[in-house]
Length: 427
Image (cartoon, rainbow, N blue to C red; front, side, top):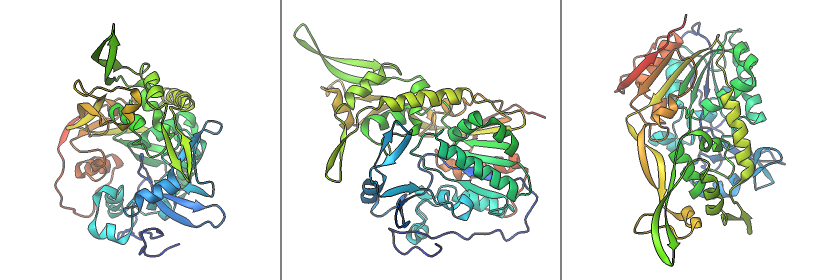
């Protein structure tokens, strides 16, 4: 339903930006968002009425608890909402661009231009100014980022979107631009549907993808409840990236209480998670819901890791990798201290973590982001933060060069420094 958003609870406003220029002969572009990068609506199953629950600036906590609290179903592999009267959907308005443009598109957010919720907005503007036309050569793909990256619904949705872009542009292959976890979703699709990927995709530009995980952020999320809901599909970040969980604990030896710094690697972290989350629960609609460490998710995650490991880049597809550098990025995470050790592992869920840091974009370590394992045409490091890479002018310059188009409209803005670049040119 089109219309202007005057109420923060219900939003159906769509941006009608169109190109003022003549459409140019370009290959279609499909933008794929990352974790938290898609608008989510809660829809009443009987009435079909939508309420925006992610992202929202006002009443966010209330609506999140009412509509988005969910639990993993090991029989289906899906994260399912606790509110059985509603379902979570991603709006597909504006050819899929609406859901990944401004994540809270109410008028006061636009008035203040709150950059924190401006997702692909600047990139969409840039591409439109260069002659791309929505619905013909420019599309977006938002998805329920709480689910696994290889879940059937997400895979089928991406397939349909690629087919749509291919046909709408007159049979021209599609150039994918993915951000963050969207790169892992594309990798899963490429692994599971290689023939479809080869048929429809020409180039894949990957931005800030955690190919080997984001261990500091993800592991703390698992233990302290910072994740959006129980059962995130990106759980498999834990399984591969070399990392340690450090915990200061009291130990009793021969009647003496000692303070020791314990180290937990990927395998050793599993019993740590089980013990720390043993009493984890939430109260929903007057009932207590137990949320211990979920081994079913771990098994699903291990299978997802295998899907990712088997991914091969088709010879017909050109791959480009952009990743962020120059910012402290969490890597190892430590709970407790020598003077205030953890007495019981369940205390971890209420502890403030201390990190050790590596170079990256504040979310994804640079070593993880550039470890794609594919024959990249170019890998480019940009000094920018994780989300800022989506509006960085130097990133835009590389994208336009790789797409083979020029920016027709001059946009004066400070650009970021290119830290380093490597290339492996292919004919």
